[in-house]
Image (cartoon, rainbow, N blue to C red):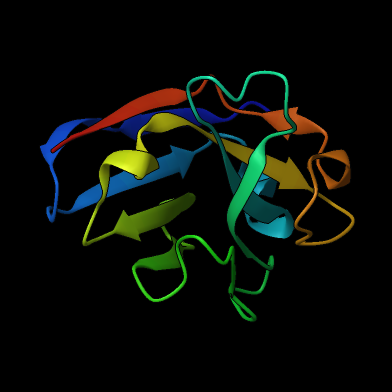
Amino acid sequence: IHLEQSGGGLVQAGGSLTLSCASSDHSFNTYHIGWFRQRPGKEHEDHEFVASITASGSSPNYGDAVKGRTAISRDFAKNTVSLQMSSLRPEDTAVYYCAASNYCAGAYRRDYRSWGQGTQVTVSS
């Protein structure tokens, strides 16, 4: 499935940002969606888990680094999953990726088969 990301950009520390992951494929709402990030200087490490949500829109799950500051949700009518991030910190600077799985809303990159193009989020101090 093809995923299209939007949102991202430059924001000051303490600010908020919303990322979106969408698809024109009507099967999008049957996929579990996850968000991951790749921080600068961490290219040798696996993508860091940010959040995931099931195909039904239940059981949101969050990575420890963003828990309490992030909310994932999906809009079934718009075939979109949104990631709302608040109280952003410079260490949240990364390229963020959404991914789709028809298996599980897992916390590992290997759980997902389809990936978005990535979007840069930069948090200035």
